[in-house]
Image (tube, rainbow, N blue to C red; front, side, top):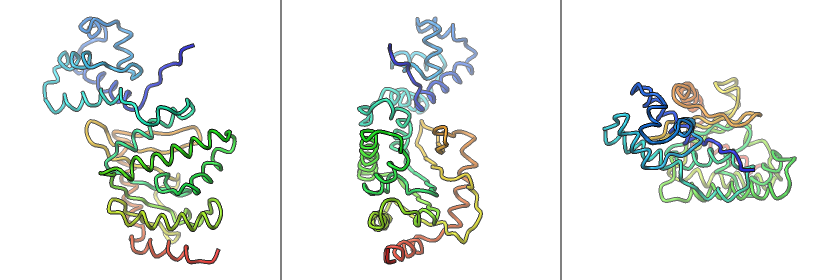
Length: 284
């Protein structure tokens, strides 16, 4: 049996934009289908993000909807073409499919504002720390799944941190992250040293939210704010026991304000480095 097509984040964005353009033009799905010489079901799948739009159809719809501004057309064409793009992650099994949106989003962001209160962000983890974290979280998965999960995490680091123009990263850590042992004492010492080293890179700013802050603006826990360039909207990502949550449009503003308030309460980069250095020097 053929596997059902799953709408990706970027295909849903494109579908929503097409539906908005169609409705603004006062046209029905039937009229668009007649113009494209496509059936209603195909046009509906375009708008639901479960069927990619080929370039000729995309250009025809932009003409039909009267999208004449060159910049607007270019942005929508780029969004359409991104739906077809594949990446290094496509070779992994189906159980990693739900993570594809996050990997793609992380790679596209020009700025990442990260807040974590349990574990270090995946991009900043050493291999041994990452393996210990994955084994704890994926306790019911076979060894092959653990191995592939570690491969994906290390590849993400390579693709993003080592590229010519990496994203600007604001990394905000609850102080508890530094005290939660993941793996052995040796693994933690190695991880903290790696964290200090990464914090010296020009595009990474690391700050600590100290225990002394007490109750704060994110009692629900960790979240990630991705700043995107056109044609993509900014996105807030959070994990829940039932899967990933993606917030966009008007839902982004409260998270941005929350992050800014947390950042203002955090230690300076110099104070953060001192705290981490002191932990490394502590006897295990």
